[in-house]
Image 1 (cartoon, rainbow, N blue to C red):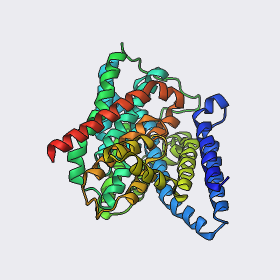
Image 2 (image 1 turned 120 degrees about the vertical axis):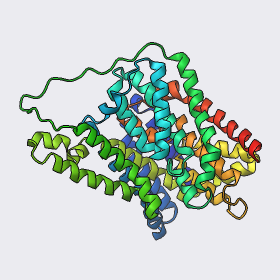
Image 3 (image 1 turned 60 degrees about the vertical axis):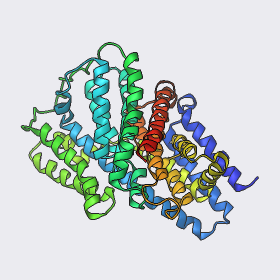
Image 4 (image 1 turned 45 degrees about the horizontal axis):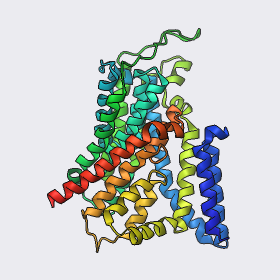
Length: 431
């Protein structure tokens, strides 16, 4: 048995353990970390412990670390807004309690917000908002599923909305204006189709969470005028600053969001410098960091690191080349890559696709690059661990993998293929 076979077996066993974590009563985070460690150990053994293995791991970590840093900063900003009840400023504006109307409002807000920010940050913000609107755990999970679909769809047509679209943009496969024009409608269709179906399923009204009026015995009645609005404006500005920073200085987004988070940190600390110690701890950024779900961060790290071992072993590129030779039809190959991105992270899949097809053969804004942007961006919605947004929501709302498969996967699949065929038809019409 070759080391490649063992590598695949370990990855599959680990992946299945993550899927059935509730049945096995084993948390997915240590499973992902064990899988990452074993996969790289097997890869190192198969390469006779060559020094280049450590160099490859370091290279992958240099790509994973920015995502983790971005996630930590974004979650901290959201926690600070939440501590100040900043999202209440938005939720107070949403008057409708009808599930169907609320579904469309949440869906469209998420869709357009994710094109300006990114799908990961948008998912975190919108799920935090849902907690202020919906009391029922089951209803909130269903809306959270729509948030995952909407955030991935909105990120697919924007060069700063999804990491894979950004990769294609930075490497010169697509231009910002063309991808927006040609991928916008298919992305919108991939969201609207699931929402149309769910509109016939959802009935009645949502019940808002009960307001907690009871305070701790030692908690003083501490209040700063307009603190909620200040925190919301500061937080949204901090999140928006990340893509602006990237576009202006051509530096990684994580640096921009860390910079804006640090500014927000100082402003909030100064704003509450005279607060009692227990209230300062609750409202400050350092206090917000203590409330972040680190198990989700570690799970995300483990999954990406494990997948990177498959990429280093050449398995992903071999898969892509095999698909190209076996299927023949280029549109079908790209759609299969999109489906695969629901199982395997879309970042290495897109990276493999970039290695398969050259800019000489397929210059900037060729059909294949636009279609990869759509399929890789929206395909991750089909499974909850198929996108960064899904992983974040999974951790925040404790959504079970199989629950998502039963309730959301098939409508996401419907939307994915509806958008894909819309793109193909639209491209034929426009060209």
